[in-house]
Length: 301
Image 1 (cartoon, rainbow, N blue to C red):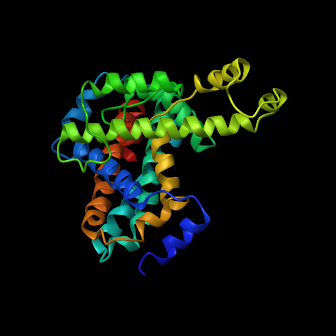
Image 2: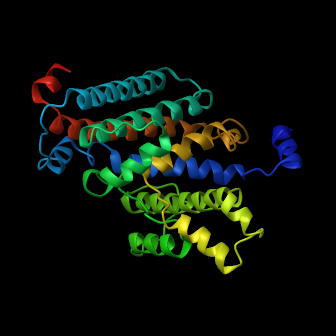
């Protein structure tokens, strides 16, 4: 009865299918890692990408935001690396490693925002919005630049189709090369958009505006207009996906990382992939920050 706990869950609550939840988690990170390996995401490419960035005038307050966030990113990445060298059973650390991965990404992205504008957001959602506005289009390297600027279903699906340009791979495939890796990334981007659309619609249903319409769905024209007005302002980018990823590992979908069939070999690669991706992201963020802050201060830091 190795699935006893899972069977009990299915009897009482709606649960994700373990196989698909596991595939989505592992395959997305494998795709990212393939595109972030040292021979692909090289120091030379990163430096070349940011070669045209203009150094700003000394701004001690903004620079301290940059240095503090990079330091915190390094701490979380180092924690991830140290644990990876000591693990015997990846099941015991998979969720912990996702948390270290996420916060390394989050702090590094906050450093980039600080370097660009000096802004410091108080929430993860706020940081993702500023990231979309100030960073994504011109200051982010592939594969971290994929984003959507709407949650209207027909529009974001059309955007995904354009990005795919015939790529038919998705999260059901364990990526083995760059084409399959991008297919997994496009698939996760669309899946996150679908989730954020649902989340937005649920929030709308709880709003005063919606309740004033005295309806319980979006079939009427006025309800659809209210919904679409909100969805048109929605975004999905790498930070939005990373935050969802952290939540899936810790809350509703958490059982798939520690229960069911033995997938130890895939999880061993998974925790290494977390390291690869976080390292690449921090290298990108640090290179941009170095180009923006006062040179002698960076050297001292």
